[in-house]
Image (cartoon, helix red, strand yellow):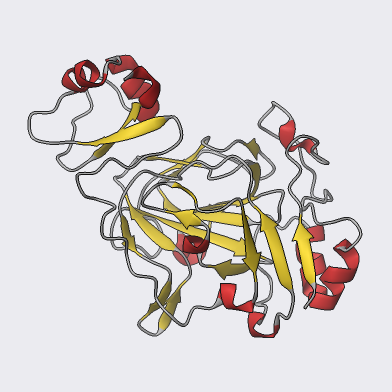
Length: 294
């Protein structure tokens, strides 16, 4: 079985992902995927002619132009993930990847409130930022290892095509535009334009990557079995992430009380959560706390 390595070079970027400016670093003709240079053209053409076109062109209008049948994908890819990761939104998963009635739910849904800030999961470049059918207001980011992440149902878009973004950078405000019955974030991971189960490499309970690399095969794209919703994502245990802990709001909690409890300041808590001192805290809400301030 052929194994192809999708190499992510963190120290020496081949492209301008490392530039400090956050807008207009790309042109439509830019090549924005970093496959192994020896295998690049050969692999893409062997896999499917449309795949080469998919990555060599930067389509700002469509998630994909043509569906790829991944059942006939015979290669094994090693996708390297040793890059910055930031949870798109710190909230409970309310619907997971897999079958949903007669449809396939191609991502996960994370509950949020109207106007909550959603952030980029990895460093990347904005490929799509527009209203897109059932997705509503949609942002699609392309990352240097070939992975793409999609964020749907925004009430407001904060980025534009060709913007360079960093992991953790605000890209949109939560909402329910498109085909959505409540305010939530629909989050997808895609490779070669096709959806793949994000639970394979993202732990949505611990809010971190499970591994620094993952083998991708035809089964990775399978949608035949629904992933159960994590049961302990919205309990009283803090959801930990790099550099922070989390506190679930209980009756009587205030920003001042939290600052005293965790040895930090109201200002730091507000900045970390994109709120202000007048924000009303909801019982059950998860608030991020700077871990270093304990």
